[in-house]
Amino acid sequence: MADVLAVDGLVKRYGERTVVDGVSFQIRAGETYGLLGPNGAGKTTIISMVAGLIPADAGSVKVAGETMTPSTTAPKGNIGLVPQELAIYPDLTARENLRFFGSLQGLPRKELRTRIDEVLELIGLADRAGEQVKKFSGGMKRRLNIGIGLLHRPTLLILDEPTVGVDPQSRNSILESVEGLATEGMAVLYTTHYMEEAERLCDRIAIIDEGTVQAEGTRDQLVRLTGGLDRINLRGSGNTSAAAAALRAAPGVQKVDGDGAGLILTVQDGPRNLPALVTGAGDAGMALTAVEIARPDLESVFLHLTGKALRD
Image (cartoon, rainbow, N blue to C red; front, top):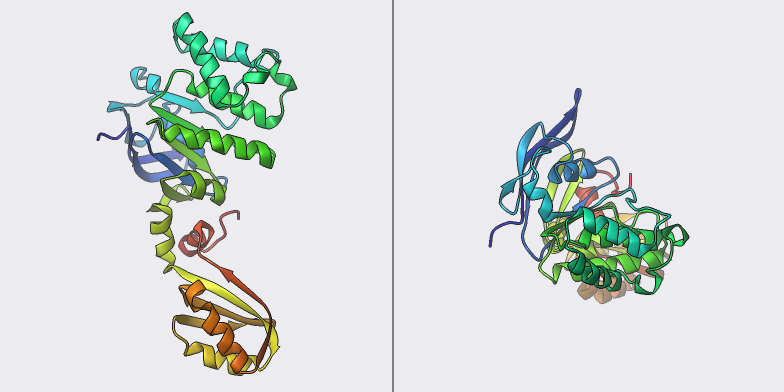
């Protein structure tokens, strides 16, 4: 199956500063691909080049097999772009917004009427279709923004930080809407700095920092870059030195550190080894007051690759 989107060696410079440096990735139909990185990592610049809004200094973008540049028009018809900034008219109703943007997209009038109803159902605004958008909550406006990008049934939907600034309930509604898109065969390019969103939505993820792809793969593939090790915190008092010595020799334990309030263990397959570690600490004279286990996630991967937290 051919790639819906093929990005090869993209570079973008502003003066002496390189903000995107050799980025490459591909997305196929029915796949949700995430660009995960902190604010300022280059995500929006990448999608601006993918959508043909700004030129690349080097590299290429192909959408549905056609080369994309700011001057090309044919491949842009395959894209639904949902920008980070809201692109809606507040004095119009939801239905009027969709009708206006659908006409710009060249949809025939009869098809547009049907498609507007379908999109309103998909984004959960069918019962508010006749209200002015300025009366909507932030989350409702975001959902309408997504609906506009879906009207013409794009081959590739680009979502740039679509949940920024919305409340948790609206955020979940937006994520539920996005989850259904790939099942319809649409390719989705999703940028976010929220680890939880990337883990929930994306089939594959590129971790972006300072304009470069630090790593790419499924969530499980990326987590394996950290060694797949779990961290277990044993809080308590008593003979922690003896407990540390005993646990260093326990199966699966890679490292034991003390932090003044107990022990921090780096362990393979933490859930399976936890009962034996708790017993071993107690037998060595440590009185436990709390036990915590943390499994590796994309935050751990980002820290491992870049030496800083994802939200730094």
